[in-house]
Length: 407
Image (cartoon, rainbow, N blue to C red; front, top):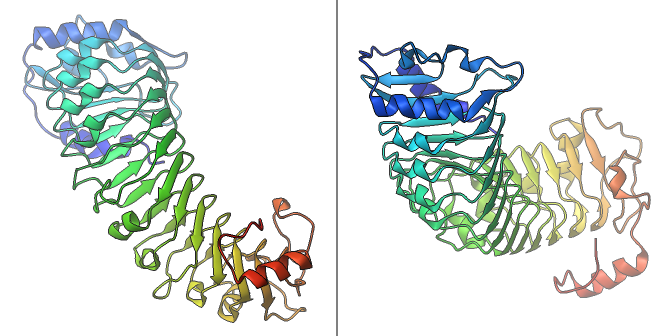
């Protein structure tokens, strides 16, 4: 998870290094800051509000940035890592800061709902209230913030649906709503500037339509939800992805071979209901590929030989482990090769070979006796080979994806 302050650092740099002429703060902004202050307090060990003395110029307060007589950025709390943060609630008066372009809150113990009045901030570009205890729904009225670029409400206790009006915002580039209790389907996102969508660890469900996400996405995480249905046509369009995590859902269908040509650094598809063969169309250069705990079948492609961490376990793969994968493992070019709990029938490896200490190989519970003894994860169990009757039945069905044998 990228901390929200990474996104607003450039704006703070501009604000801190620009010359603003401070007159007397607009009375409406002054009263709004007073109301915001009354709703919040420092947690023990924090002294963020020490500078908030309303007998002096509010534009000199910690976290308050002004242009002329208007507040244009409000960063509540001490942004230093490990600072205690704030407690209390967010006062609706924040909606009266009419020129506000950025609003952030550091991690703390702020509770209550996100104020509906935020929808009045027509210039708001950055909204980040992460790692607090916000509850209730995400206001649908946030869909009125046509200039909004980053929405980070992650690590809270938000419930309800993601409003479809948010998906319709035209300028969004980052949407980070992970680690909440959001439910329902996700809206289609129309912004062609959207590069990051992080919705992991929620209770979202439904299917993803082929055109529901823009091809501009570079980071997509939907893990730990309850999504269903196929994603092959959707994934084919997302050729700018460098990070993809669809793990721990109920997605079905096949995975297009072209996915393995995308500029990915991490591909996480584990613990779904994906099926079909895995057929990359060229050499795979993704450092980490995890497609474990699915229903993939067929032979393992030798085009995975350049992958550093390869998790193929708990599927229905058959045939031999490609020799080129073994060579890479023994030369320490590959660090992890997990193929346990499949229907593999062989591997060409010298029983006396020494596997590099930096590499891990697990072969157990296949249709063969592992020729080398290696340390496997505890969850792989103690049984070295799959029962013969399962192997015979599987061979007879020739990898039929409709069979009932479990991995």
